[in-house]
Length: 117
Image (cartoon, rainbow, N blue to C red; front, top):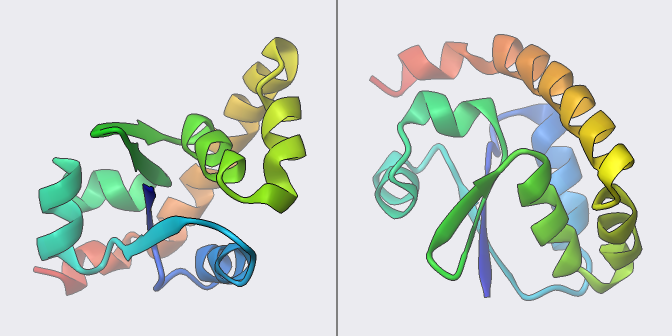
């Protein structure tokens, strides 16, 4: 079973993750805002967790597009997306697009860093 660390306080992030949660999957969903759990199991600080989606598989942590690919591979309905995004050219384009989107989502949600202190 993989663990997906996501920001449940982000309206955009939580909407997407809630969709995935509603589908057939064998995933342990962990809200990064439970800092005691999220930081301990990931070895990441709150800022790092807030910046990107993270997945833990076989005691190894993945972030960004790699994390999405692993997550999609564990949701039968989305395996096909994981395979497409894994293709070299599409993967590299996806990384750039993800980093742009993740940057803006971080800017929108970085106020949470002050709330958790």
